Image 1 (spheres, rainbow, N blue to C red):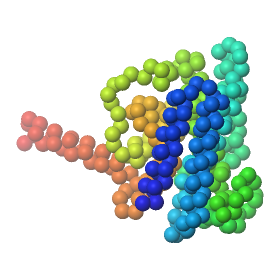
Image 2 (cartoon, helix red, strand yellow; image 1 turned 135 degrees about the horizontal axis):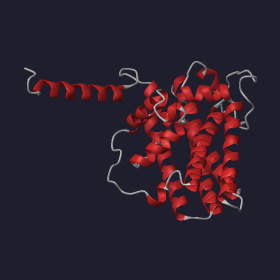
Image 3 (cartoon, rainbow, N blue to C red; image 1 turned 120 degrees about the vertical axis):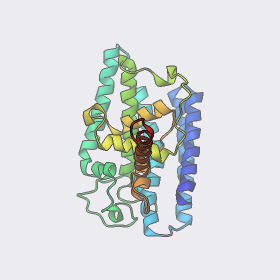
Image 4 (cartoon, one colour; image 1 turned 60 degrees about the horizontal axis):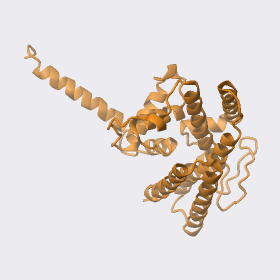
Length: 286
């Protein structure tokens, strides 16, 4: 029930933001409409959290680690995307590509500065959750950088930084895609994407399982493909929106009864069953 409410809330917000982007070409108008909707949603989210106590410490951790950051990331992302778009220099293709490369360097430096926290975020670790995602927890200032969030009733030491990680990964994917379109290495998916009639109709968590399997086994670009790049690829290929792949990994990790690789296991079983069936009825195998 906890997941369903916030997932529906988030989906509704993302749908509104997509409508704004589709309806306006002016970045200023898009940002204005988006920020108004995001602020409204963030206020509603805060009011709900403060009016209804969390039923358990685990639920509080889940909210500040998985839920609040992805909402707040939308605010950060839209501000950064606006700044990126407005800062594009007038000049040749090479000038614009150099600008994008500089922005990627800034993002890479941010991740490098916060390498320990980013590793905690990317790998889905949990051992410090009670320090990082519980309100009022005492954390060493050496291990956690100072953050602008100052609301003790609605903040933890790391939820803002996790939101920035989500936002900057999305921004990085956007920049990489723009560079690819500009230098011709990829086609503008939104402009010329054909309707092949093939869409992902299974559960998004199953697709997330596939993505993490490819990512952690290094199957793409000799293991150098970023998680956000793989997500963007699958979104374009299967015409599906993977709202928050790290949230999906949280669902995978928290499976209590079934295997974390439940979907991949079922694929392996289906292939083995088919192979056994083919061998069983193959002429000469009697």
